[in-house]
Image 1 (spheres, rainbow, N blue to C red):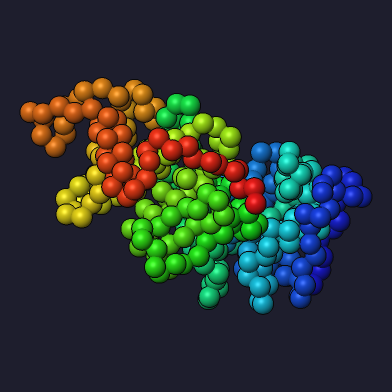
Image 2 (image 1 turned 135 degrees about the vertical axis):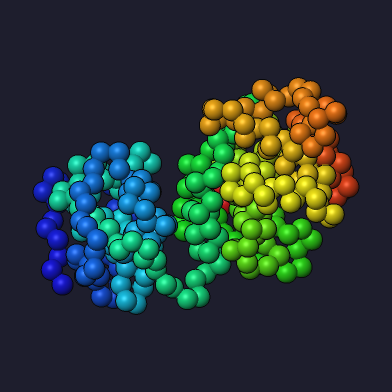
Length: 330
């Protein structure tokens, strides 16, 4: 293999060196045979923006095409940093010093895989499957404000990266009473089954990933359990409407649907309207005609608050309990 030229800008990276790890085993070919195109990167480019811009289905598909080998298709984040320095010539770090940026990279080229290419890795760890599913959820995840709290698509990238880095984990627990749960104390996603491809499983991942986002963004804030659930249910409902409106409507007719899910789907119907991408809950906290029966009116925000309180009390939980968020600190 011919190694790419070393970066000319600096002999050593502007970086925390413990965030780089030289891979073991054979180096991937560079450039990789079958590459669609070699593209120069820099400035505000990221792996995510390049994957989106070149129609690569998953950001880790793009990374693995560049740095994967026949024995290990998905490098670790620390190995990615090593490759970025030695193959692409990256030397500038992100503000937290944990990852490289493309800015001022020299020679600064990445390889774009053929259209439709996807890495085929049998037996991926469950936490990796959850992380990959989160990548697929991002495009339809909402920008949502429930003052003073907010969530947005880019927050999910932090969750996905934390799963790769070991700050968060995920496991299957068949005896779980709920279909899914985010454990705030141990920073772990728990799921009753191992499916990550069904629509229902993705709804669960949206909901629990939202809890993890709030855990990271608002550690130390005075948040009540009902507020935490309100945001998670609303994000789940909006994602459903954005992804499959027919599936959202079908949830309203399911006989075993909880008060919280049903009320969130109703609220999501109103929130998804309008031209603004940012959905502000307080703007919809008012009486409006019920879209299911225009002869009636409802306040969808108030209905969801009541539904969540009923469900929490029914499970023996206190809606006003403080949620002690740790920011993923172990």
